[in-house]
Length: 293
Image (tube, rainbow, N blue to C red; front, top):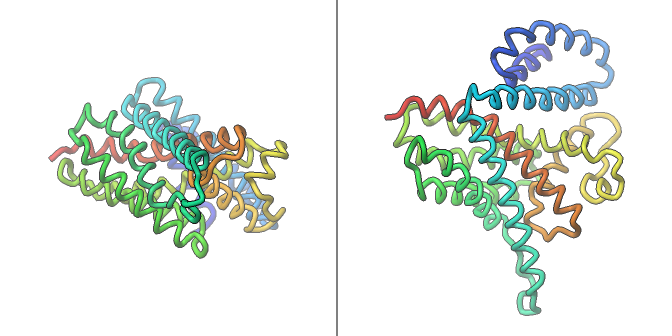
């Protein structure tokens, strides 16, 4: 696939009306920039993706805040709130574990599957609040989200040493998508698309976190040193370094935050990831909700 086709596909992150008006000039500008950056492709794509994700989110929020799509805004906010609540609960549980620690608990740890179940409960519960006004899912949705997220986190963290961060997101998103699909398939047509939407949303969320956090924390040396390990100055390792850092931050709930700064950054990352997942999955879900069985 050529660079032009990759960029044209990424432009679908923008609203349809925006694409109709600006996709042509944006492609022309991309081609010109790409011709001048052939010697440093990794840095070029990192800058392009960082700018594209940030501006696409801004355009989507402007459309949804104008009430053209009230459900999409509700869904994105619910996913954001669920992710932040999950991060706060995970940090609280690990703090309590450390506070009441006893030598008899030597070797005990907060397992990835347990944290995954917590993510599923927090995210699934917030989503259920929005969905209940359109389709009855109730407790089944929350339980399916918890079970599938637990299995997904366990599998993804087991493979973390050999898989790339984007593969981490793909595995987790696929597990959650399949678990929630088991509930959706009985209530709406073409529910299988939800698996694909979830599997795509999580890697995009990881990518957005890596790029957004790198940009936000640039220059904050103490925080950056603790949470964002320096990547290679050039080459593919630079972009991959951002993604590895994003996965580490997304898993902060597995460890007790060492400072208020670390907790704040962890919750911010959860918020970014939840918002991106909500924005990516809002349209497919809205389309499926319009085709009930």
